[in-house]
Amino acid sequence: MLEDMDFIKSCDVPGPTKEAIRAIILYKSEVSSTDKVIDCGCGTGGITCEFSQRAQEVISIDTNPEAIDITQKNLKKFGLGDNITLINDNGANALKDIDNIDIAIIGGSGRELENILDIIDTKLNSNGRIIITAILVDTKIEAINKLKQLNYNPKIMEVNISNGRVLDRGVMMISENPIAIITAKKR
Ligand code: SAH
Image (tube, rainbow, N blue to C red; front, side, top):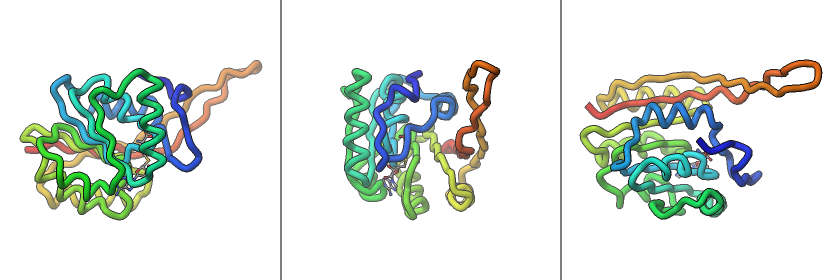
């Protein structure tokens, strides 16, 4: 696993998704070296960089040009990028030209989550997996309802990680943002 502190960050781009969350996403995705992965809303490239090391191909999309720039810089920093395509566009638009997806990760969707899920559903391979990270309560509900409507059997896990800061007089636990990881498999 890459370390959070090694990522290049920007105040205009959220991320990286914290290491422990990336680890759960990797495990839930059941990624293998033949998988084609979509990272919709790649931000700083936290997820993109991890999947780049484990999947055959990653296509990373973000509406914010600065996110694409930072993702590119992080890939370079970690010596990755040969199997990555970066697209500066809205996920809903970019996905129209992409087929045969094994793993679709949605880390950002603006107000287009339902639309993006509709498109992903038509592009996902028969054993495909969808993973959505959500911070807003509203996004969690929207994701679950939409996946149900599309005939998936969604699962939701709310994760609260606290990391210890070792001080002279003891260890202080510092909590990171609670985040939900919503997963669904094609059936
Ligand atoms: N997982 C990332 C952080 C994601 S932050 C990391 O580890 O760094 C969410 C990102 O989603 C933001 O960069 C935002 O610009 C992007 N985003 C929001 N709506 C989007 C959409 N409709 N299509 C593509 N990207 C989108």
